[in-house]
Image (cartoon, rainbow, N blue to C red):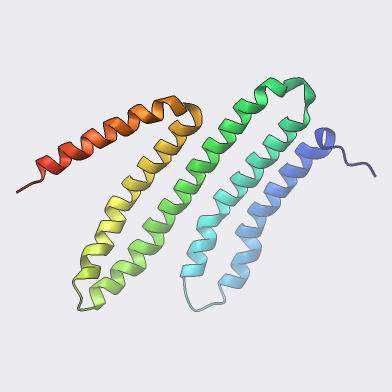
Length: 169
């Protein structure tokens, strides 16, 4: 049996991504529903789509790398792969912040007498997503245009100084 990636690879990776989707849709929830907490069900629901996308896109990249006629497109495919990974992981972290942190940390913050968690919980759920999107945007720019990253850092630094001056009392 000779497994040749260019002939059977796309079918293999499609099956593997379908298996990952099925695993997180039907099999793992059978075990997580038996637990007392809801947090593991939320985590499995969050992981289903990103894991499937990552496996599928990685498989597509591997299949493209095995085709010798399109070697010039491999660098573009690698950049697109990194772009997709950056934004899938960003989406994953955003979902964790919005679904888990917002639900459980804010409930816990309301039950405690400390004022610190009353401030930190809303700050993480409101400023956290913005911070993540900015970081993901910078990483994306770094992948596609590294020379533009220096100019972007200068602009961000100038905006930071402007904000400091604006919010002084």
